Image 1 (tube, helix red, strand yellow):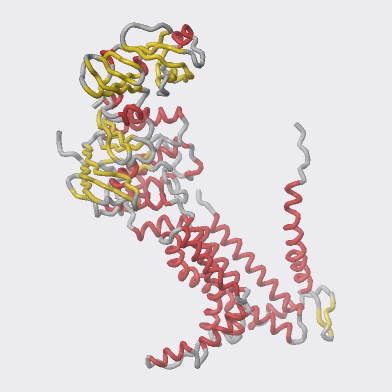
Image 2 (cartoon, each protein chain N blue to C red):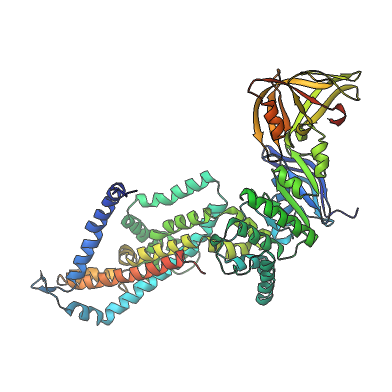
Length: 347
Length: 280
């Protein structure tokens, strides 16, 4: 691999007594689509803002292209950002918004108009250049914000939950726009989101953050099927977690003994919801008993929620046909079984 | 669906309409009508002649007073805005929410004393033998005459309008979306260019309103030019006093007042268009 574009080294950021980011080490490669994902307050936005120079690290170093950037003010960096609120200038027209970065860099009026118009065209916004921002739809504003950030041809684009204010159907469309744009331009996208579907749909690599630290870095598939920590397993997707000591191929859990394929001593295993089978009678092999709570339609299937006797929540993904056959009622007991070969062992 | 008459909003609106009618519109109409009346033997006599208008507008002294009043009001608006702006910037962007509330309270405190009292205080401070000249004399400078001059009047105008201009500006600056300021820096704007190309345009409404307020209050102020400006040169307000004192010429004073109100309307509406106007 070539030199990374961005290096975070032992970066620490606190606001008073509140620690937002702690001992962060992260490399961001040139041309990759990296998603920073985690629940609110996990430090993902602070990390992005430090990259843009909007916050200074309390300690540690951040370098971009090999240069330590800790004391470089935002306006001397080439790290344009797309804000969650978009932060378009309401007192400027669409084309003036797009031109802003070029104007600040002292590009001549004719050239900056030409480059801005080129980007408006690329974003399917031709004909809108003289409009005011409040005369545009949400999706159009989104594209103006992208054009404004990309017009200076940066090496890296920072995006702070840019799709969170859009309608669901627009989110899918903008995801397509963003991934295509990133591939065409070949520049680095750093994308902050709390949405798993956005991160997994677009990113080459996903960084899961929790409580100011990185929990796991990996390709979407790796994180989805192989969460390394309990935090990731619970945050990502529909996972069921079993913990307990293992002896002679049997794990002793709060839900009873469960066969496992290997291991010895304390262990945590993850059973993905789409690998759980439901039945009324006790099946052979790995299974636990739980009471049905409710179901949720989730597009690709139906997620059924259960509660085990000790109060843990379990999820199982079924098809509509299966649900109709089972016809579960609230409080009814079921057996949830799985293939021990298809569980993920954490750690 | 039939639309029922909903009296509620009309009832709520009524006090304002009555107030404006009783204390603004009716006196204004009366004053405009009176400008066509005549005074005979120190008594007002309803009439409809243009005598007062031709006499007042035909006088050079009237136009001298008009231009000096207009000029001072413009100047006070500009100077007050310029002095207020750094203070408002500091209050809007450097102070905490609580600090800003305290500072705004401090700006309201001056209004606890009558403006006349504050003008008298300036008379003492700016007097030939007052503390300012004592300091100037102490460092070897000749005493400077500050009272009964345009400078004295300007001190009075600023005393009157500055706190309000700071309040207007602070409100409009504090209301700016901080993301816009960050976005400008993020797109390569130096702090000075952020000020010029984002903060000022975004706060335009409040900045213009502050200046217009200063203009309006200065234009109609009588205390500053009279007690601190020495009535020389006379402003329109002093002209009104003089006209009513000499021979009970209320109709001619009404002419001055109508011209003043027309000017204020013109300036205020132009400024409001500038403040709220959008391009495109």
